[in-house]
Length: 254
Ligand SMILES: [Zn+2]
Ligand SMILES: [Zn+2]
Picture: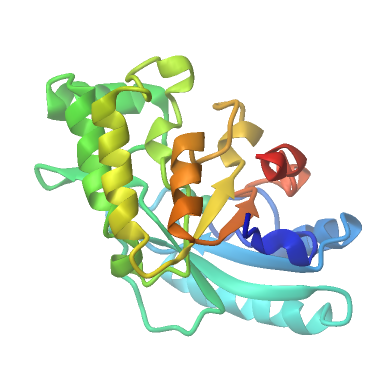
């Protein structure tokens, strides 16, 4: 498989206290050096006006860029630091020349309302009840219809957690990931998202946080990504330095 991490240990999907992560960027740099990483990329959540709980503020984004720039210089002899961003499909975007962009979808938009797909299982259940009359299939299909355009909309180099919609679905609790309709929706979105051959990530974030026993995306999606010839990269979607390389050995073997 074409796994970009072949160059050495690295993680490009990293959150800090500038958004919803726990640590100062410098603490993560020190951890990455201790783990023998050759590259560490930061990918703060871009500002989303409709939900400010998880993202960087507008002023915070400016400070984040400055701080990563400072660390790049300070640690340049020990590790390569990259300044990235995790753009949101529904985010406002900007022209700042980041080193790379992760494009992600964390919401579906229904009746003009942004519904978080990865906040808590309770919130998801309430939303599906209230906005989809309890119909998980309609909810999931709307997610994938939107996900299909995530690369185009965000200008992503890397597509983040392609099947994030399965975060709370361990054991098929809410919908059947083996159902024909499910696979069809996911693969149709993938065919479109893969048009310009972006990099897809194998993301161990939900494993580190105890939600799932496998990384994103599911094996059938991973196989199709490989068949389509898109490169893959391992990432931990780290929100806590203790999990900077969580699940990497296991995910790499996939
Ligand atoms: Zn994300
Ligand atoms: Zn993330």
